[in-house]
Length: 328
Ligand code: SAM
Ligand code: SF4
Image (tube, rainbow, N blue to C red; front, top):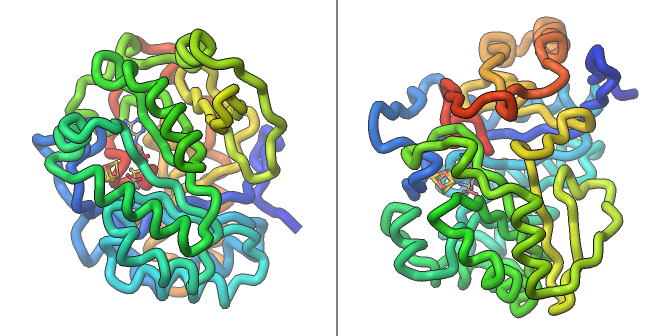
């Protein structure tokens, strides 16, 4: 029985677990270049901590888990954690990973063996120089090779997440649609959010879902697709070149009313809404293996979750944590 229901009747079945705030990349919109601190090592949940907490989450309704970060593939033993989660929690229907893809060539085989269901890879530019610049000096070709390695292991479909930022990459929307068709990849365009951000966020920097569709429809015929049960908040379309694309609009048209997600940060905070700094600290209860206390804190986190985020009401807004802290 699902016990994760909030006061608005929303049912929670999806947990995103950030396993680290560390990352080999320095994406300009994600990790600030100044005043940025990593979480102290002793505050990071161990794998045993995560498995203990997840055991309870699964008993009360979690059915889908996403492993994220920071960059999850930089944490030692990550594929063992995924394998353990798979073995210990038969309730989990899907375990997925969000990665920058730079280490996929090395880990795809182990990820497949560990039982990963699907992988999302973040790519914000298909142009070598631009990619290099936004990520803080990394090579796009390693990521493309990583995607191919994952596809060869049969981890399908690969989804590519692309954050669109006005003046930076909206001129690549059509290139991404062609890339999707040519490589059998689903590309999802995501509106830029005011989290992290060395690139200054403002409403003007957001390329809205409407605008994205307008640009695409000048080139391709667009057919709206029905949603699969785990497809999440993206609005999905098939294009006349064969590409499947998704649009995720947290700013211009939020989907808070159907939110089914909770986020466990690398330092053991439960963050019920990505775009609100309200968090409940689970670490002590997890480390003391206190199931009753943990259950009560999880329920508290549903009480502090508001009906919707407030970003759309502001021209400019800042949050305390970066996406790499929270687990995007
Ligand atoms: N390192 C992995 C990666 O890049 O996929 C996983 C963590 S990263 C924080 C997860 C996702 O958050 C990425 O797709 C990234 O593009 C997205 N992200 C980070 N900062 C963002 C922002 N300010 N607005 C929208 N998406 C953001
Ligand atoms: Fe690292 Fe992902 Fe953030 Fe880029 S978006 S800095 S890869 S955590």
